[in-house]
Length: 411
Ligand SMILES: [Zn+2]
Image (cartoon, rainbow, N blue to C red; front, side):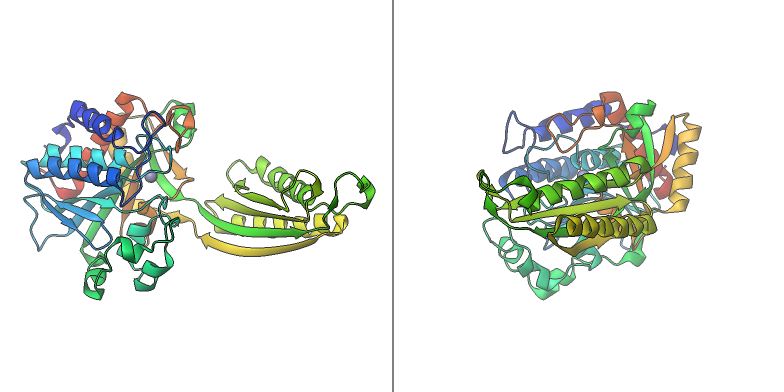
């Protein structure tokens, strides 16, 4: 019976510990960029494990990987478990790779079972965008939201294009990267929460309902540069002070909301000299929420407030919208199945939102998609301190196994 199958928790933890050492920054978190040496080593390790199960491995032109169970048949629909192995710089040891090793643990547990669906483990390439500055690159090519021209547009910090890194794939090879979504029965991603919600509530499991969307703007404020000693305070048109007032106004506006978040992650002053009043200040600002209307409302209020503050200070303010993504709802049927499973196994859980984006977001627009979260200690992620209790890691993988068994009719 499907529900009696068990994850080998010890091997899962062992896999994670082995993979933690594939890093460019030993002793300072995990740095494993896609298409680099450490990424290659991590993949080789995973391939070795999969081959020992008799799995067939297929790598596409983007270096997305599909690991097929030996019992898969061409006529069956696909149940896909997927996540990524790349990290941010000095990131944690679980982001992405936990979903991949959790998937591997599921393949191990089901290797001798009969399945009425094809089961495969997918490694999505360049999810973090650490290399080419664009998140979910592999899954964007899989879904067709990126295509041939993007191979030239995407460049790493040495100005080398993705096309060059991939060895100039042929149009046919690139076409083969795209999935036929009519074949996909479901896609599942297991991931650490990367936030504080589950830990704070003492829950070991989260079932993701919605993934936040976002809007990003770039703000350029132009004042008047002048001598930092000889210019009286009343005569100044300081672009950086105006920016500071704007940023705090945005924070004040969004803070009481409880769900929406606003972030200014990059700021630059010109001429960037200690003894010159800043003439220009440029910063990015993003708002995220599960509700697109709220994002728009906040953006409208924030931009109006910025215009008002800048006009009062006598400085110029230009606002450009740079990117946006819509919030996503994951498959309600899968959410119900997961809730039923969690209740049956008496696992304390919560249906929740994801503030971070994942490969699941790209796939969710095309196929039934479900996401499972386990708690992050201290709510921390993308830092060397990123961690999750061992028992929670095993519980999450077991839950993924139960769900995958259910969806593939494993027996
Ligand atoms: Zn991730």
